[in-house]
Amino acid sequence: MEKNTYFKEIEEIYLKIKPDIKKRLKEFKDIWENGSNEDIHLELSFCILTPQSKAVNAWKAITNMKEANLIFTGSAEELVEYLNIVRFKNNKSRYLVELREQMKDKKTRKIITKDFFNSFNNVFEKRDWIVKNIKGMSYKEAGHFLRNVGFGQEIAILDRHILKNLQKLGVIEEIPKNLSPKIYIEIEKKMKEYCKFVKIPMDEMDLLLWYKEAGEIFK
Image (cartoon, rainbow, N blue to C red; front, side, top):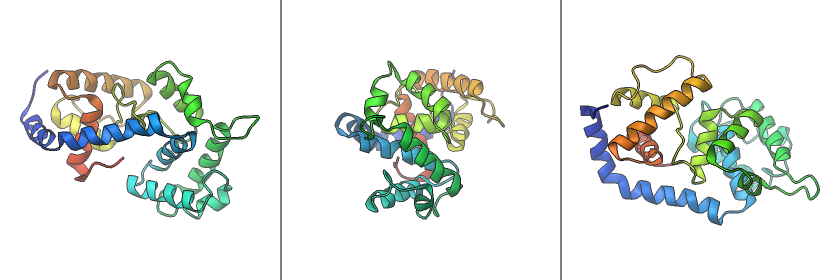
């Protein structure tokens, strides 16, 4: 394992924006510590909308549905009207409704998303449950949600931007054509080892590489 010339470029950016990264991660953690079941549900819903769509657009759609008082009550037909700015809007509107039903207490019919995920022992159990039980969410989307609520220290969000940068850093030799669960975990382990080696926490590395690509620290 070594630090190549590309890492020096990444490290310069990191030293410059490290305070902003830490501030953003604290904000994510605060969402979990101080947020309600509904707040956490919005974050989970957001990550259902992100595949092959811009994160900014996905969050705008969530915000608009919330302001219209539909995110917790609207039918798939009502929600889809707000999803023109994301891809696969018909499927995603159905996924949002199914998710809402999954995250309701059977007796009170209230949203219990935060309480539900509090029942797991660790972040890996949380992620596995999401991947197995929530439609439209793979390891990447599950990791995105968990990072956005303060649980990103041990898990990776392996989208194409991160994979491209991991290749340039020499963490992986090539970008896999198919990211199966097995390959995902293998790359995640390599990223974790690399982050320890360069002394940049994994959740900070994720936001750092995203900043390198997008020029901002978002969600």
